[in-house]
Length: 186
Image (tube, rainbow, N blue to C red; front, side, top):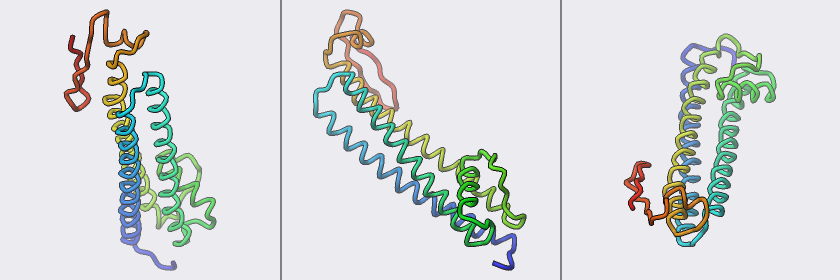
């Protein structure tokens, strides 16, 4: 592009914010629905705590890797626009700048041309929103796996040190009140 106005930064930047938020929301919603389905299937099975622990760790790890890939795809959209606008001369520089900015790290040493710098600030704000959504999603998945599987495995009468977490020789049953609050009834 040859001629730009300050409004161009906002038009392109906010369009990319909306696009990446929509992509992220769709991806996170899909991941959570798949993981919820897995959790529901696991609830039908009688599993001991070590097996449940391995499944929960695997599910959280898989979600983290998928979220990292999703963040990379979103950064690639920003990079593609930077190259298209002529803000960077190479796709390699654009993607490095974009990932660095989206992660709010800012240490790549690359800078946008002066008339496109507002887009960089908008991308950093977008990255904070996206990483916040990712963090909340991972926490949510950890919470529902913990509440519905770990406490179930602990209260199912398994023997061993893990049973001591909820029982000191007498029968104890967790009572989930929602919102992550669980009390132990004896």
